[in-house]
Picture 1: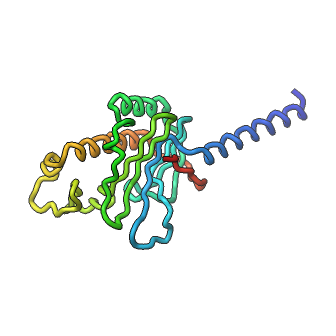
Picture 2 (picture 1 turned 45 degrees about the vertical axis):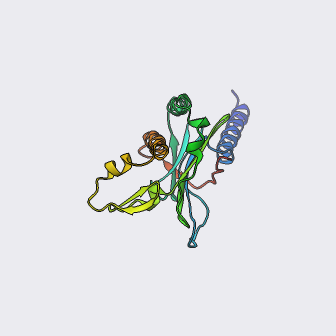
Picture 3 (picture 1 turned 135 degrees about the horizontal axis):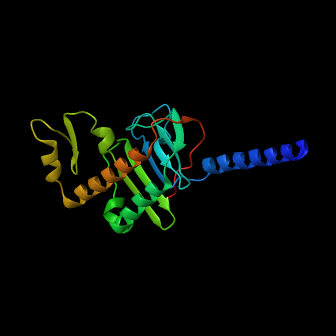
Length: 198
């Protein structure tokens, strides 16, 4: 291969890789978890990403696993594991269960959203329990935030309505699966993330 041909090949390859990177940044992820502020003004009122996963195996995540936000890291995960999560949710009827789409939100409270958009498989779950229940003496139930006192947290959750328990179970399944897909280390990521549409 001549020097001129080699330069052309490398230029084309670099252009292809740059275009692929830009496509990742401009296309919405298949699954995104993010927080949205409500009530009091925040310096950056937009959504704060906790994790975003694309079907091609790219993942962007925040070091803050509850509140989200920059700085972000980027890495890769095994695509088959995301497929397995989505198939499992589909088999359980999560994408057609209207009760899971109900928002469990408090007045003027920030909340977390889990958004999945994989073609016909769509789900948007919203809840304030992770952000509002960070203190060990509080528990977020179907009725609001309560003092735990001397009560057992697991027992309190077992006493909640079936729809709330199912919501919490599905939420935990997704959160644990996503956490398992995040690499131990990545590279800094400063690109914009287009959140999945409703």
